[in-house]
Image (cartoon, rainbow, N blue to C red; front, side, top):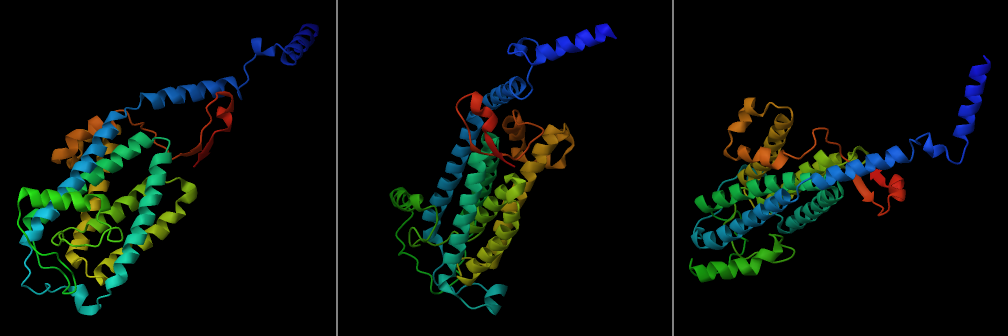
Length: 320
């Protein structure tokens, strides 16, 4: 009993000594900093150049859309009335409704960009979103080239036709590339990019990024954004910027591409990629390249502030 009492006194003395760090580790300091340092090393190990590669693919996809529009403008039939459309049969044309669509689209884009660039795994989230957007817009460019229909409204202005020479196409692309298809930035003059709505692709790609990667505390916004997304689609049709089939195809392409990619990503990390029938897609061979350094235990954290010193790492704020 006397020995135990002496040991307890000695332990008490060590714990309250100014040099106790020699004998005891404080879990609130040392281990935390080590965990943060390990986390930082893992973050540094994430490859950035695959994200840059997918960003280039987005640029190429968008350029292909602009080239397709500049070229197909000469091929749009201008001596035909708008095609029959179920939506047009029941709802009147409201030309200013496109403003509602574009304001909603900008809100969704801003929200998605904030989530992506403040995400704990932003380089991985960015490459996933960029790849899905690039694939969707490349498919749209192909559809625009192979199928031309009359404009949906007799009130739609189309610039006079010239020719399909390389000089004309380059001039048109240079003029409209910076506006990103937003009519509030540049009045629309060229016609023909109807099949697969570009506004719909952007709206639902942004919505899905937000819904998938936003933290739980702001997930309630995804319900609001979902309603706003369908209001935007309704406004596109009211403005007669697209036929109903264009909007349906835009919704289908954007949602299926996003869902298919993330299904393949989950299969890759669960070691079931080879048995997933979705892996038959021609582009699925890029999944291992893009997902190789992605963590299997993926959590949605938004870093709103990050200190530069190791001491203040404990006060780093994460938004979950």
